[in-house]
Image (cartoon, rainbow, N blue to C red):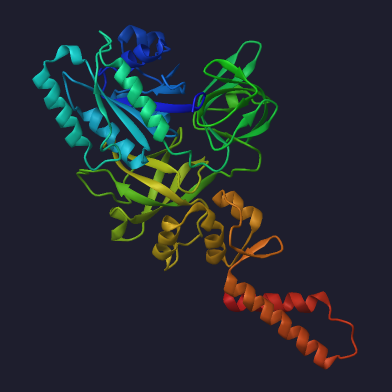
Length: 461
């Protein structure tokens, strides 16, 4: 629909024409730094935007293609589920193209367009060969079947076809999977006279000027003084969009890339979580617990240690417990990327299943995590109550991003259904015994009911 906002990340090998294409599409140079302009090389994230023929406004996160700046690329694509993959027609598929596609594949991108750039530098035979090469390389990945559009940023040939392909991708893109407002902060700076500004990709819900917000994992609190999307002042910013938030009460020194801005009390940072792990295609060596890993989720990066749940953890449906060195704000079903620090290569990706796992995995860990992997979000509170026996409803919503749909309730608690029945029977039994023994008494002390409930809980533990 006209006016709807979407965010698309670029990807591709260094010097294959990502930034040149963005300039052609938007008229905005995404390279912000003098060194980038001097070297003709994207180093950090760049941003640009334009309006497509349908009236949809699209924002671009332009990422570096060079291997040395892969951490910046991951910060750009982490929160984004739509991608513009660039492959140069004169050079074809290159090592960094492959690694970027591996990353996009394990992140589970929701849509893609492939731009075959530098069309003016090759003949028709070479162009046809490159097109088929790209199609074969994408086979079996999340980008399989994506439209491949040949173009030249130099002459302008094919640019309108790229616009049309982007329009079509945005029209069919699924809604954001985030249930709660979350701004993935990828840049922090100060403006004289205005104060601290954070920018990032907004998902989940909207933000309003005047909102009180929390930033995690730093724990900073702030109020939104003003909002911008694509350099336009907004009273309200809604997902999925690029947003700049001017904050009152948060100092620049407190914040860094990787923070998450949300509403107070809506999120909790974690250092341990469980996930489903999937190795990248053509992985040359096994994933082991002895490796030194870097984990990337949203715009955040941290060191990570793995505990694999059996040999099956190396397969597409295996499970892992991950301990990170820096607290992270994660949601169930978040995607992440795992890189081996020593070899400096991407080895796997995964899906977060439990942001507050039990201290010990337990003998049923595989069954427990399989149930979570197969569940819809609305079923998670009930699953959490089943796992724990009982959990406060507010805690369940914090850990799952969903209300208590279909879960048995007792006051402010969600209770496993068989346990709730056992408590009811135990309390009723004690009250019946009391009234038989004391028929003239109006009622029993509350402590008797508590003892009955406690006895049932101990028996079920």
